[in-house]
Image (cartoon, rainbow, N blue to C red; front, side, top):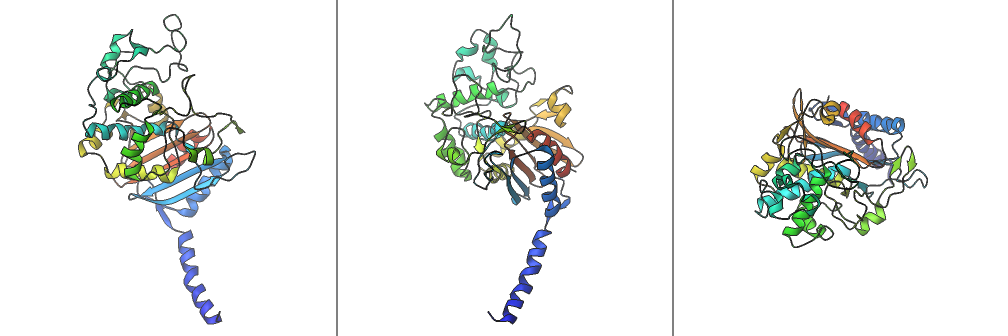
Length: 371
């Protein structure tokens, strides 16, 4: 190649790469932060917290402007996390499932305020007829009165046997975070489509994943997950778990609405962007989702730890000095995750980890990006 031509090309390219490396991003408040600063912060967090692998995306003005797939899938095999790597979304599943539910409400297949027992009586809690008050709105705003999970929550052993479903209070009167409610609602939706909890996945794919182009998002098992899923870790060691489960009889065929979603940051960002744009839902359903459905007690862990003051449908609501943040965290033990979005400027972030340090990472990255 002619030397003068090579010099010209080099002269053109060097400023471009120099600018790209110093590109300015935005926090959720709209403040600027450099790519280098965010890279350094994330790397330091991964090192100090011992996070093996991370999938992270930053959204600005409704577009992904920063994406990283970092670390290793398994600390023993040293297999690298790649853009194709799949993580457990844990309770971020609830927000995507809520979108699915609201779309069915728009289609008049389900009513937010019709008691669910009208669609499907629930033998697991039939002895307490108060359950007949439970609606989809209560499920999505965590006011059903159900425990989080019947097999894991503390219970009055004199009143309830191990694995027995129960109500902590009259439905609709208080807030209490519950995966059990999401499980019941998923069974209702399956029934409305003449399906079961093990055959519901295709409806989600047709109604949500395909229209929003979520190519890597599944609530049930899929061969892509088997080929690309990262390994979970607890206390710095690989954790052997075939699939996230909440019931002894559960397996990977179940549509696990509360915590079974498998995905990665770019795919989930695409969903968050569609959600902020109101894509696929009526304005009324979008307004319902982000409206405070229940106020949280100041003694609630969500208030004390996150600063959430209310819950919408599938999202926590957190007021800050410059507006309102909508968020959700996820914790499957060996897989933790989180997202935060600002509807005012369509900024946000989402991440997935393959370890038990994601909640701390969420708090730390939130402090940086909410400033």
